Length: 35
Length: 291
Image (cartoon, rainbow over all chains, first blue to last red; front, side, top):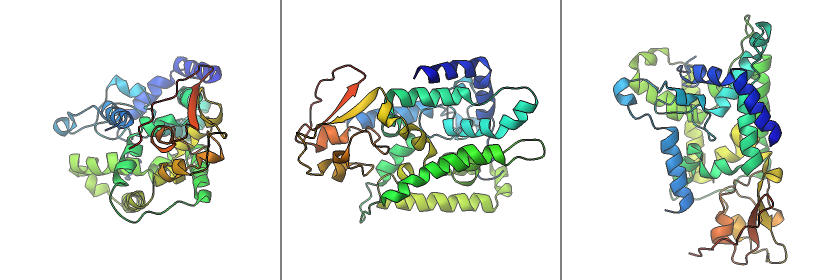
């Protein structure tokens, strides 16, 4: 459990949360079956 | 409506709280989408206010090689950490209590028809979907620029079709000109699964869902764990008959397909053979509601 907590914190500090936000706020053409 | 159904309903509304989408004709684009919801909820759903952990994980896999070449160390640790932390704490519990797609399957299954069991060997397919469509293919199959695709989202995910594809065709008519065989094939997959959901209990969760597959790996070692007292068990199979996942609890607790809905504990077992522990804490025997 501790390991995953550490991974989560490392991921946040690497800027991955921002990366998730950038992707999630674009319309995903693949998800809707077009792209 | 029991407590679990209330919590499932609240979770649906919290993860899909952007109700202005019919007026803005666009999906939510705010900062809440930094957070991955614990259940399966497509982030291209116009009402979605959170990210999908499965979509996010595939995106990290698909961009890992290109990111490496540019020195950007994005390996999906954020998503892996979040999934692992959730799984380590409660195992597959989000499937029963927080997943909108799980709730939908339970409601659709109430349609009165003959019902059919799902063969156990099919439940291993979700690990193939996880390994192949979520992890390997996005990483291995890349274009000239080193970018892969989100294979599960693109070719399989019925949640994306139902929550995002179809609503977006209504909200943005200009997208309809772009419809091709991929869209129709996903509609066929969605339709097939909807029929299966009527006929069998939670077929998507048991046979397909890679997110459930991830959480299932934590069931045996999570902080929250189910317990089974063989001295009290009479092998009446009431737990199995009522289990939304077809789990034979009397064969052992914390099996991979147990979603910890607590139905066996609260309404099925009349002998007190089923319980749970939270770490080392002693938990009181829950009140049983025999209806």
